[in-house]
Amino acid sequence: MNQPLDKKKVQEFARKVFGLYTSGILAMLVEIGHKTGLFETLAQGPGTSEELAARAGLHERYVREWLAAMATGGLIEYDAATRVFSLPPEHAVCLTGTSSRNLAPSSQVVAMLAKRLPQVTECFRRGGGVPYDAYRPDFTEAMDASWRLLYDGLLIRGFLPKVAGLPERLKAGIRVADIGCGTGHAINVMAREYPQSTFVGYDLSAEAIARARAEAQGMGLTNARFEVLDATQLPEEPKFDFITSFDAIHDQRDPATTLRRIAAALAPDGVYMMVEPKASSRLEDNLGNPFAPYMYGMSVLHCMTVSLAEGGAGLGTAWGEQLARQMLHAAGFTSIEVVDAPGAAKQHLHLPQVRARGGRNQTCQLVRRAIPRYDVLVPVGGLHRRKRDAHHA
Image 1: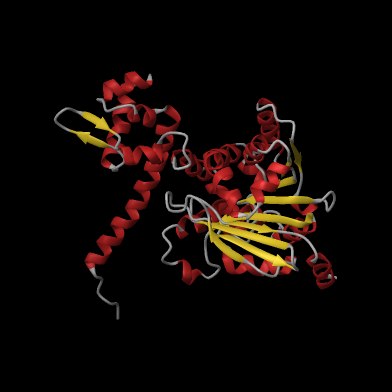
Image 2: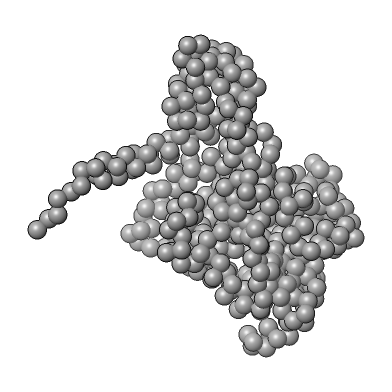
């Protein structure tokens, strides 16, 4: 016999579902506000729809409707008596400027993923995945927008000091590589800050590498270079003193081989810093994590499917700390420490760091970050390599 429905629960859940649709639409309108400069215009001062449209150089009717959506969505404020719209300073921090707190650039991820929805849906029926190439070129742009401000604001003063003595070594001069470098901004920022060190970025995308090279040339950098390379083909020689990967391991076709190749490419006292999403490998541990739906959703719509498209592991975005530890141990790193990444308290961003040591001078550092930021893992090579090679022989 069917149980009678709790009408209040039905209404509450219906409201929640429709709220999801509303949020998706608002996310696309945030992208419009970012790309048209409307948020920056609002940050300069309040105004009516006519005044704001004139200042932004946009059509008033579209601006007025957009403002209405933003006001009813709680992103901006509206004074009915004066018909004036305003952007609270606390909201402006998250939607404008060049700070790493500006989340507006990440809004374009929603529309970018939506374009691939029919292909991903078909994978539920036939298996396989949507290849990485099918996400270009707008995936490259979306990732650049999501990470660029973070690198500008936190890479030098936040991430790198997490590794004891690393800034001093970079100043003196060491060899550095970034795996899955995308448009190369992290490499270029480090190369500008540390002219005595040499830097190389590797990525599968020829388009992203071309942009990285162009930026390096525009910045006048002579100590940064970029190559198109599958991470599983990373050469063991010459060795690197510091290797990074930012949100680039979980969607690899063969992440286990990638981690082993990274370990093999490290110098005896080298360090590997891996940034990955902060999550548990156990679903039950993530049920109370407000960013978990974003991670699992990103996994379905991009990270997992691009790996499965190549017959890969399909780890998924929320592969989690436990599995990361297992894979690091399998790659030859035996001691792992997790720490919070910079900026975690200021954004919905949490970046714990993991450090794994092998022998007396082999280190792996993992930094976990909550969406929209990621975990970082740093392995360091050394005496443990002989032990590791014997283990995998």
